[in-house]
Amino acid sequence: MPARAKTRPVCHNCDNFPVVAIATGARHRDGSRVLLYVVCHVCGGTGHHAPAALAQAGK
Image 1: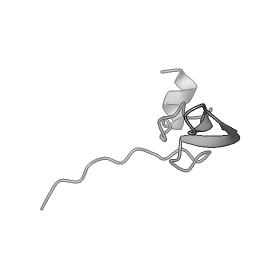
Image 2: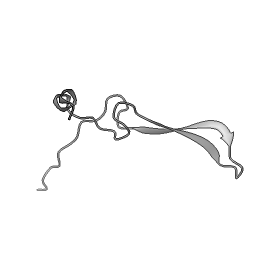
Image 3: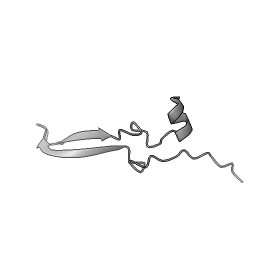
């Protein structure tokens, strides 16, 4: 049987969708859409968060 990998805790603020693209409605000269990329401010775009003990210790 394969060994199980440790799972990292999922960010509850973004539910593992750390980066989203928002269409502004405008278009570039070539016809492609202008997108605004937004990153989750809690996990910093990783989709995972550090355990509470490490976060409080500042590590």
